[in-house]
Structure formats: structure tokens, C-alpha cells
Image 1 (spheres, protein in one colour):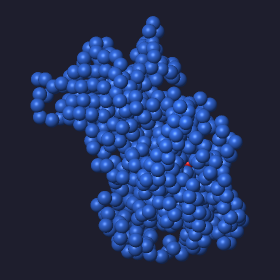
Image 2: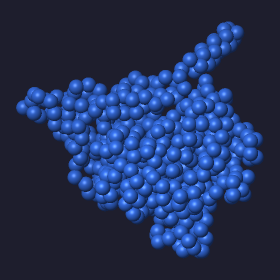
Image 3: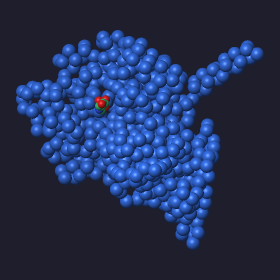
Image 4: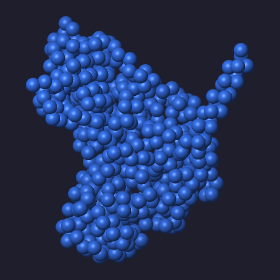
Length: 576
Ligand code: DGJ
């Protein structure tokens, strides 16, 4: 009998290996208005978490981290791999730690997004190898204004009064670019060799939060010469070809300077900060595009850049210029056509606005970093990112820092994992959406399939026997999927919903059937049938809290009892 099972195990492993050998490498695919990440031949939702910058440099350290990632219900982890780590001496590569990280991910059934910390990270150059840092003649740095601290808000700690130099590799140096590209090509060649048929590594982030701190542009001799020269023809051609679809802020800068189609940077875009930022955006994008080209020549899985900044002139604290912020998205597209998408780090409380900013002109939503910031919990952000914007990935930063998994995150990931087959089926087709609604906000209307849903905030129900809950309350959020003309699935965090038909026929709609339940291996398993107190006596659909946890505000989820199953399946009827 034992030999039978042994044979069965061998055959199933062989089949698995054969399957992964035959499925294409991870790639992006359009579905309607959505872009999907395809892994092992199927659309993949990266319910991720980003490790601390240097967590993945020690396999010993990671031993304590892997179980925490599994408990957090991740299916993907974002892990840094640095130029200094893989090329400690020029031309000599060491991938031993990376191999251990890949094996650790496999052992815990996790996919990987590798973050290439190389020329730039957070507006500085902390991750190049020391043989690069020490050779500042061969590998030139960016320069700033002569000797004075620029008037750009809080000067970063790296700025030294009277210094012209910042510890930032100049993006105008071919030597900097080619050295980075060679190392990145070696990395991607190695990833293909060790993982090309297993697809543990599904995407690559190239560099991190690129930009220049301390000044609006690089003022090194190389940069000054380029700035005084003509705007590159590739950029001018892109702007002319996409004139009517440009991000409004860029269109406005170009228009204010007269829509010129040639000239120096200041002739085409005018004098001042936005022009300096457009100049830097072009050169950062052009440099990284060459790095991406070198990497894709070895192993062309999807590659993206990430960005913290907001628009022209709006800068967090020390300020960075030239990053792939929304305003400069067109410049990055023109300079970096091989870069597959612009990811975003959303630390802004206004999560909905930032998602809209970064998904302009079809840029897919890849949230490389975020955290729960009142009034939006991580759980709300998850439901909204995947439901409203067809997110490819959602990844809180520093995922291993809280000693216990964030229950709001794990509850939301659990629901998204259950709904995943439905989500990937409905992405980009107008039959799925989500809302975030605050306690002080009016109800939100959203069209999903044949109905317009009016979604109102519902404050946490009173804990039995306790006084009325007092605000302020965290926002609520919910995801809705139209599985049929009058059939929906929904999951959420404290909302009540009414329905208005948006197709010909009787003008009113009501709840025909409501049941809670779970998906088990893609199959719906119904639980309680709901009506009466659980659906406003039939008046409206009620989505209770996904989780039961005393929040900092002192309330718990639905009635303080067991957490709801989180998912409702319901059908509607129409009447007049
Ligand atoms: C954004 C960066 O991308 C991260 O690497 C990290 O430095 C955070 N800021 C701060 O923790």
C-alpha cells in the first residue's frame, strides 16, 4: 500500500513540475479596463506585505518572519534585494541569500516581488556597493545649488550647509546607469535560472521611491549642460501624440508655455519648479528604462517603479523631485516605455483620492506600500483597492513589524481570497465595485451591473447592554460583485445598501433572498438565511463588521458576537 502512495506522490510532483514548466512566465494581461497579473496561467491577486528594507538580508532573521506572514494570510511578500548585497565586488555576484529567500517563500507557499534597491532609494543612494560609492569620479553624484540650503521646506538631513553634493547618483551619468544595468541583468539571469519554471518571483520593483531631495533638479555639470540643451525628441513626440490625454497638471504646464514642440526645457515648459521636475522625471525614467531593458533581456517578468510623491509642488517633508508621481506619469511613460506600470505608496489618509490619482490614463493600481491610517483601516483599503480599482497588489509596509497580525487586514484578505475567482472574472467589466464611506459622509452611489447601489455608513451596532456608541468612527467599506442580472455577492464593514434598477422595467427594487456564507475551494457554502432585523426588515442590505475587535474607539463589531462570515449572497426583485 505504501509503495502505491509513494508512486502517487512522485507522479503528482512530476505533474506539478511539468505543469509549471509548461505555463508561461508571469505576465500582464488586459481584461476590459483592468490589467491582470497572470501567474501559472491564471489571474493572480497579490494579497501582499512588504518586509522592512533589510529583513531579507538574513535567512536567520527570516526564520521568525515566515510564520508571521502566513498568519497574516498573505499570498505574496515584497522583499528587498540590494545591489550592494549581490555585487559586493565589481563583477563578482553572490545570490546565496536571495536563493534562501526564494526557498523560504516556496516553503511557505508565498510568491515574491523583489525590490531592486540599487541606484536610488527614498531620494538617496544608500544601496549601491561601496566600490561605487567610493569612486565618485567614475560614478558622479547629483549636485545642488551653490552652497545654500534650497528653500524647499525641511532640508533633508543629508544636506550639508555649503555643500553642492548630495549622496545621490546622478541620473545623467552613463557610468552609473550601465553599472546598475549590468548588476540588474545578472540578478534577472539568476532569477530565471533558479525560478524560471517555478514562478515564485512574480514581479520586480526597480529602484525605490526615486527622486532628488534638497533641490528641484541636479545641477552637476552634466545636468546643467543637458538642461540648457533641447528637450529630447522622444519626449516631444510623446507629448504631441498624447496631447489630449495628458495628465491635466502636465498639460497645464506645457500649455502655459505655449505648447511649443521644440526648444530647451525652459522654452518648452517655462521657468520654475515644474520644469526642473519634468527634467528630472525624464532623466530618472530614461535611466531606469535602460536598467529594465537589461533585466528583461534576461527574464521579462513584469517590472514597475513605485512613488511616494504627490503632484508638482506638493512634497512630503524633505521633498523629492522627479519621481513617478501622477503629474509626471506621462513623462515617465515617454522616458520609460519598458516599465510596465507605476506603483504607488499610499500613506495619505484620503485613500480613495490617491487611488484615483494613480490610476489615471489606465495605470493599473499596484499598492506597494500603505498602512492603516484613521479613518481608513487596512481592511477598508483592501476591499476598496481590489473592488473599485482592480488592484494587482495590495501591500502594507513593514508587514512583520506588528508582533501580531492585523486582524482587519487578515479578515479582509480572507474575504478577498474567498471571492478571488469572482473578482478576477469580473475585473474590468463594470460588474464589480467598492466604496469607502465615512460616518460623516453622505451615502455613496455606485453602479454595479443592472443596479445603482446607494451605500450608507452604518455605525457599529451597540454592544448588548452597553450605552449607545459615540464616534468618531472609522470609515466603512464594502465590495460588491454582480454575479447575475439580479444576483450579487458582497462583503463589507458596516454599511447598509439600497438598490435602484438602471435598466428598463419596474422602477423599484427589493431584497428577494439574503444569505450569509463562505466560499470553500471556490464553492459557495450558505449559512444563515437573513431577513427582519438582519436586513432592515427587508428595506436594505446590511453588511455588518468583518471582524470583532475592540477598536481604539472602544466599539466592537457586529453585536459583539462571533464575527460575521463576511460575505453575503443576495438576489433582488423589481416592482412598481
Ligand atoms: C517609504 C519607502 O519606500 C520605504 O522603503 C520605507 O523607507 C518607508 N518609506 C518608511 O518606513
